[in-house]
Length: 173
Image (cartoon, rainbow, N blue to C red; front, side, top):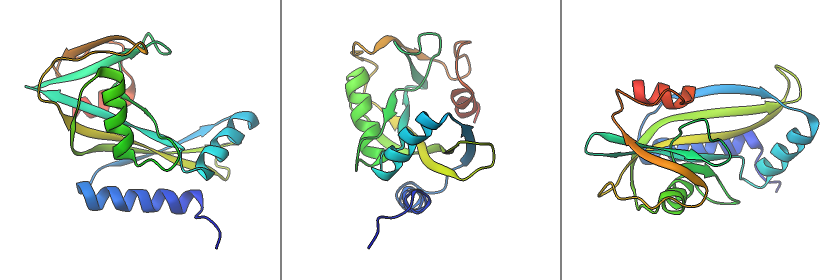
């Protein structure tokens, strides 16, 4: 029996997330990439690790945003790429603990990005999922890792200017 295709893996993961957390929005994105990047994406998909998870951490009405060293000009939710065989929920909890030293409880899914990578626009590609979980922490104390330049709690109605479109869309919901 051959391993499930990328699209079958994505379908299964979406069904599992919906079973565990209820309904959520799925946003489809397509990215045209050079051949070398496409090859990396294909290998990651075959290993079951194309995609990742981020967590919208909340405490007392505030949301935690971080600036990573490799993306110093943008505030984002803590999180990162999945590893081989790791669930999105495991990735989310692990990365929050690793990145900001907090233990979180996942309470839902705010949004999922179903991102396909192809060599040409509209071409056959490989697909992965980025899952944005809702999460709660017991207190605001965080201990950022060396990957984090800065972490700060913000009022969701008054976020910093330098945030990505997915952060903005989630905070606006």
